[in-house]
Amino acid sequence: ETVDVSGQFLLPGAIDVHVHFREPGYTHKEDWRTGSAAAAMGGTTTVFEMPNTNPPTRSVRELRQKQEAAAKAHVDYGIYGLLAEDNIDELQGLIDGGVNAFKCFMGNTFGNLPSPSTGAMLEGFEIIAPSGLRISLHAETASIMAWRQKRLMEAGRNDPLAHIAARPAIVAAEAVGRAAELAEWTGARIHILHISSAAELRPLAEAKARGVEITGETCPCYLLLDSRDYARLGSIIRVNPPVRDASDSEAIWAALQSGVVDMIATDHAPHTVEEKTKDVIWQADCGFPGVETQMPLMLNEVSKGRITLEHYVTVSAEKPAKAFGLWPHKGRIEAGAEADIAVVDMHRTETIRAEALHSRGKITPFEGVSVTGIPVHTLVRGRFVQRDRQLVPETSGWGRQVTAIQAMPKPTIRNADQTLAACLQGPAGSAKGAGS
Ligand code: NCD
Ligand code: ZN
Ligand code: ZN
Image 1 (spheres, protein in one colour):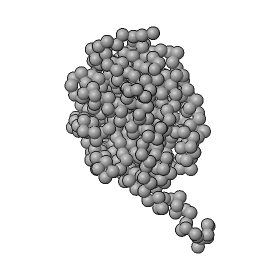
Image 2: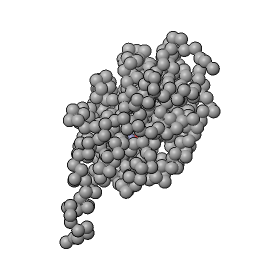
Image 3: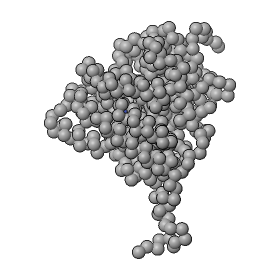
Image 4: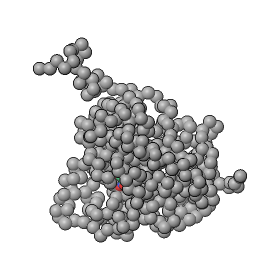
């Protein structure tokens, strides 16, 4: 079977290192079949799925459960393990059991997973560093947010802008700086999720300049929406961290162009329409679906001349592949790479409609937006999973878990003699357990 692709572009399929597919535990919001169908429709051929499911992916047991759920996927996937206060002793098992990366929630968000103390994070970084697996951070400092939210609620503030007031950019900047310090100390590779502010860019750029193994992503909402949109969209755009001012999105655009921000991910975070539309901002769930609209929205920016097609490929495929150990098999179209391809029609215009999304989350802040530049076919390892704007339903189950191929140089383990594990063993030659 052949398709006519004359006049169209072949791009490496997008690699989205930040999606929430909700299974197990919250399948009324999404599951692996619907989430991966949305990815296929959006030209995304590999996703990395987050551990804030129920149960969270905190040990090998839950990893196996997630792998079972993921077997339905239309596209390839990586699985995140959790790094939390109460599963430090499970981290090595998760590494040996085949997780592709770790996620650490420094601040509270959907799933209400408690944030680890800096002490627990440090030990977690020490354990994960030698594996070379990347640790992705929800970089918001819990203690600052808890205090501010308490004060805002006491004052009776429940309007959309109170959501920003509870999570000012200092919350994120402080967390990025602290995470970078821990990464520098341990040699762990880290990734900053959902960059939303100008304030985070300085600690990120400074850490890169010092040689810290750090990458950063932003999401279409932080590039394309700003605080003026709250009046129109209200709780629909409630997301952690919040959409901020136009000056923030300007700064993030510039950082994406310069390479300080490495990549685009979506933070695909589906919830039901009821869960999203509340009069009181504190009651609305945070996040919205994004994996199906990312490529059309960003190609529309290509059409407008805001980013080149070449640079879009760098930030949507090449850099995520390199950062998460998939390069050179994924993230490019060359002999020797897997045929993960989005065929895009840069002359086709569509209007985004929540009703038409393949996600179970039928609500989007981009409702009614007209976009030019559409992925019209998607291939995963040479097989059509989307064809002529139609999902190929029988490809449910074609997706498989990626393996990091360790093409990245081995990480330098810094301060290895001062890790908690080394300290617990005591000075060399000392009798074990000989205490005071
Ligand atoms: C995410 C979710 O719903 O799982 N929500 C969000 O607002 N971004 C969690 C997260 O990534 O913080
Ligand atoms: Zn997050
Ligand atoms: Zn997320």
